[in-house]
Image (cartoon, rainbow, N blue to C red; front, side, top):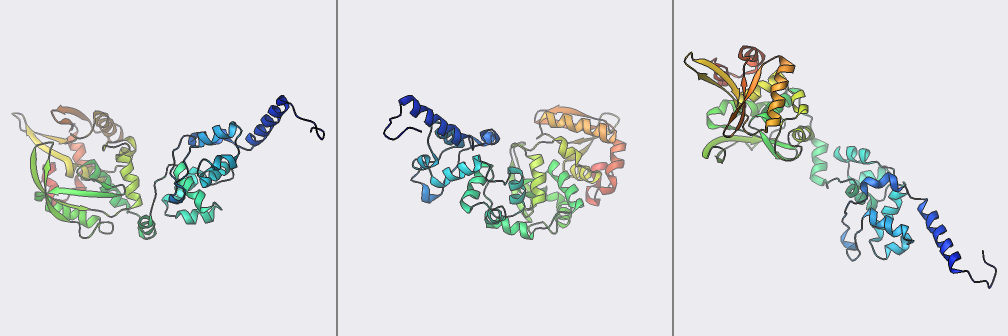
Length: 341
């Protein structure tokens, strides 16, 4: 320390400033929060007059010698306070734990209270962990929903391989032609406790794949966490695909439903030989190859892919073995698909 009346040299002042910055920096665990450095975050309306910054910008300002108080003059005070606490490891709610509990239906207020995090900071934490807002409707659904049964799960997997599709992040829509009314009613009954009761209706729709208009019956489920997990397997990055995790979840009932949805039996050649195949035109070749391999590895059923103008189809070579696997699950109105009226 300088004696009274003694002036510090510029070099001493610079050294003291660097020492102060180093002491300040020692409190922060930058390496532990590196994955979140460039997350862009929004701020509440009451702080709109102040800028939003990223963690990296906050770090750069701190390393330039600015204090938290200095940075708060340029950016949202609550955000800067959150960054300071987060970077020092004072918020102990991990991304894994936050995601698990939030997806289970706990509100942000509940999480803030349970983990001793301020209500302002818990909102910033949700953003920095990349989680979408889940409102009151989601909380109510989580509190009242029932898990789907194993049988429903198997039917849903088979249906999503076939004609079913997601109608929301956590809901599935089922559809069949008007000729298959018995089949759609069977599915409607099977989904009795997770279906939307008033959703079964007749529709006219245009299928651009075949440039043709069709009439069909459709219904959809209510939102459900189990369905959300299944849907995520089929739609990981946009279009519906078949992944190994999907195939690992299939049972003979699933395959039977898939065949009732998208299977066909044709009579080919002068010997009137029946040929069974899946209409898988909408799936990419990578998915087709996985399916062909899965049938052989899992069930010792030989299949091969066939290219068509509109996509790939899977032809079943081991037709008798295939029928043996699925026959007991085929409902009466669909037995014609396996050559048995």
